[in-house]
Image (cartoon, rainbow, N blue to C red; front, side, top):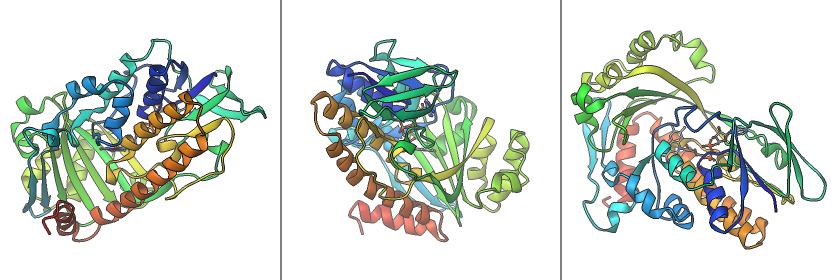
Length: 377
Ligand SMILES: Cc1cc2nc3c(=O)[nH]c(=O)nc-3n(C[C@H](O)[C@H](O)[C@H](O)COP(=O)(O)OP(=O)(O)OC[C@H]3O[C@@H](n4cnc5c(N)ncnc54)[C@H](O)[C@@H]3O)c2cc1C
């Protein structure tokens, strides 16, 4: 059986690796020109029953523990007046330490790539579309005019999947919020105050319809994220010169006028380009009719805003689950049903959390949510 996976993100690579662990080769067509062609984003916390489960199925649990940072589970939550509302310290020992450790996304991707034969991922191969051949097989069109034919096609190509149209007309819609990402380099040495504020894990401050957060990564950087409730065309209409990062940084601080100076100093400590991205999501509970020879995993199937921190976990779980079903000659429809049932509550939580974190008076509501989740209230 010839399997083609469109997209070599965490979902597609996990799928390829679990297939390989069962003796099945797959071809991964990845748009990026190489492993390092694009900044892969910050740190991810993998849960025991999703991301970590998938890595166990991939035979990579030990490798994962070597790159994971349990202490990254430390967190502090502030309101925009600078009041500390909650502090959590990661357990120092025992299995609880491995509940939801952080790991850098590039390190995770490398862990998976190193465990695959070198010719599995075809870099710089953008899938432009795919068409059914009528017998469950598909023809995959690549940029440059090449084609591949396969017995099973997996769309793991993220938010703007080129495989999704084979299964559904659904498209991602804007969630009413833009995110912005900035980086503090060499944090401990060059920016000790920012480093101390963020500590070993994450810092969040919530104001009226906007958030400021920062997360320590394993490579000496701290990634600063802003989220702002705004119109879809805000980057163009805001007047903020995002192509001139220094002026843009100053303008962004205006959006947080009145917040504690030590919080805004996090922005001053950043350097380099600012990434600005709209948060988009597929309809909650999206399903499609079974279609022979093709399915979707990860964001391609159930894109959601990052406010529940589950997207990468789900993508990896989907990838491993699907690989096991294919390896056992099982029913892909059953895999899809399980994926739909797993994704729907996560997507709902993600949408609910987005509303909560970007609401007026968010800080107290989120403090209460965390206290309730940990059984304290
Ligand atoms: C700011 C932010 C923070 C997040 N934090 C978390 C978190 O803490 N925990 C968590 O679980 N999730 C988090 N997520 C969500 C998570 O990043 C995604 O859900 C996850 O990356 C989805 O994995 P994927 O493999 O399905 O898709 P992707 O990671 O998007 O990978 C898709 C791959 O396909 C490639 N591709 C795209 N189009 C094509 C094409 N046409 N042809 C060939 N290749 C193509 C891309 O280059 C990419 O490599 C966060 C997301 C954001 C934006």
